[in-house]
Image (cartoon, rainbow, N blue to C red):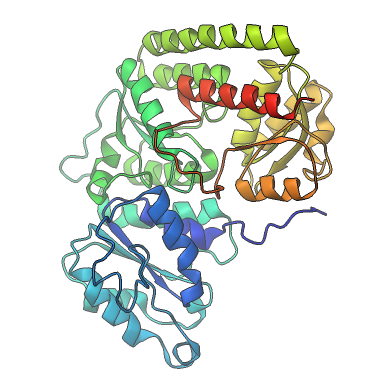
Length: 436
């Protein structure tokens, strides 16, 4: 049994809301109780701020509760018995006049039981704006399932038919799938991959759910390849686009490009699929390796670490695989406990298990994060806080949401060559903190 609380682990309902909120000019309407609104509003606005006129009368009105994102119908007992139609139609009329590129109504799990005709409400209340009705986001399904279900619904209304004008396939282009605003440093990760692929002559057309606007969905069918950077949040969408447009899909064999080896594998694999030249980007990775060596050599000479340092990870399987391989193979660190987010079946679970067995650390997958001593913990802030409550001496490195509310003014990333250096910087400074 796990020793820490996972009661706020996001599920498919949150996944659907954050998918819609990750579209620049969209509006995610939450059809549900007031309490379901505030976390989603706060995270959406902090991760992807769009509205700066916070004193707008609209945001102080009936449905926004002083927050500029995720207006809610604040369903109460009467609405569950007699329908929340009146509130929803008033909110739809308000949203329809705000110039959104997409309006999506997301039912809370309880609201899904009422049986209101969301599609009918949208047809009657909203004219001239693409609309999506998510009657259910999957109840207690995984975050990735709800996230991809919402984006797939957006594809249906925004991408157009396969033979629409402007959907002809363009050589040397990709869509990046699986990135989103409920990820630590999602914007920096996106820019890092766009920059490196651009050096190879590969153009990124769209990154749905990670800051693109609604119009960008019309470009999805033009890509020569869909790359599911994080398969837990992009593989199903890639299959949706394959069925819709016939676009081939690629899942990086070494997982997300975390660390130098996985990054080089990612660049080679994408470039091989597009007949592009990875050499310019690989040269940048080699330069970053050289920079890393200078700092590692000095640190190791003085303190002996990071080789032999103990680490634990809580992440989805693909990230856990790429990160564990890099920390173990490149830095010589020892995995103590690896806890995987429940994102359904993943091809990276057996790969991770095989790698851990190959270094005689197979037990890490069943070890408790809380009771396994470590020097470094790579996880979300809640897990880091839970381990601190146990009184352990360690350094927590946030790789996932939710965060401890540190305000990131400069752009950061975990992916790409500078992302590897940023992780290395945190590791070396973290070890200084925990070493006696």
